Amino acid sequence: MRRSEAEGGIVPYLARPGRRAAVVADLAQLRGPVSGVVELPHRLHWQPDRRVNLDNPALLRWMYETVLVEAVTPVELVTWLHGPTLVRLWLDLWVPRGVRQAWEQRHPQLRTTHQPAAA
Image (cartoon, rainbow, N blue to C red; front, side):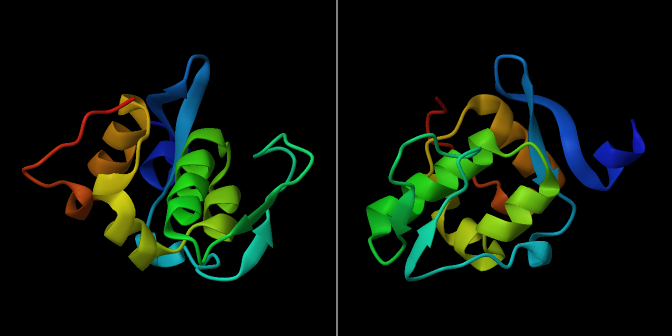
């Protein structure tokens, strides 16, 4: 296992074809916003209006799904995700199987006996 995999970083599970999932080593590192309106960078969301109202629960989940799939570095994860919020939303997130496997392998506390269908 490469050093970046051992510490978080890029792991061997796919977020989408040709892109490995990015994971942080410690959920406490995730200190992103949890409320208000944020504007995602163009690299994560390609629409002209990239503003997301995190006070809307559906949009908050959507942003987490988007960041988990599109992030290519742990820095993007730390910037946009919040650890306790990720744990709270985890079962409701619709993410590719590779993303789910990567995060649950690194963070077993995300695993539960009930596994929702992965994209």
